[in-house]
Image 1 (cartoon, helix red, strand yellow):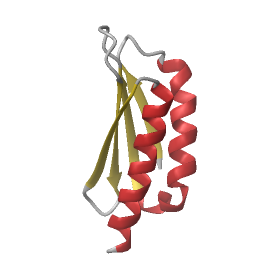
Image 2 (image 1 turned 180 degrees about the vertical axis):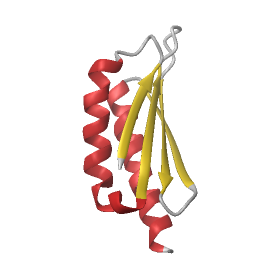
Image 3 (image 1 turned 120 degrees about the vertical axis):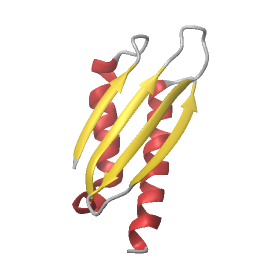
Image 4 (image 1 turned 60 degrees about the vertical axis):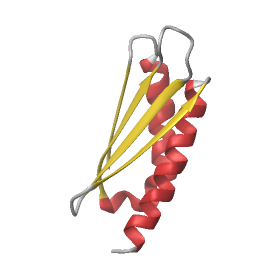
Length: 96
């Protein structure tokens, strides 16, 4: 499972990269044999709107799972999106 993290210029991607990689890995390690790539995009607008986090998991057998989250804190947006992705992956992969 490869994890890719990117973000808008208003987000400190270097700091969030390690955090997001850790959260994604710990939440999805049980599903790693079924996941090709997990992309994490963290975006923060310059007008004080909540931070958005979109996570997309590409499945090895084809298809994808995507989740979104918003929060005033970038780390909370990452946490919530990772939690939702783990739940969605569990449901999707259980049916295979």
